[in-house]
Image (cartoon, rainbow, N blue to C red; front, side, top):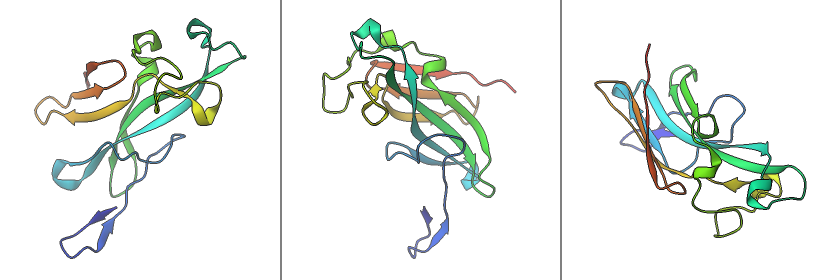
Length: 144
């Protein structure tokens, strides 16, 4: 929700597509409030036998961010971590912390990436993502 100085709701922003609702880690207004940068998660089935999760197909929680046009809800740009960062880069293994997940089901999917923050360059339009569970900063170049 976006509220004004009198705490009245002036707009709401939701994720687009088939992903979870907006996560608390990131919400930024961009382009003088025309769009919003949000992050969320997407749970997908994934072969986790490499990490000794051998009870059939495992579950991976990938980090996702979207830039959304506030007025229409249109997703202007989206990025999914598993399309660009291999899960073997994960330093927090399944079932090793309170928030890592065990990978055994969709509600306990392994969070191998864990987005902490996202920034968009006002000059280049590129994005920078900080990921806790891979101890990385990922640069996403956008060309239009």
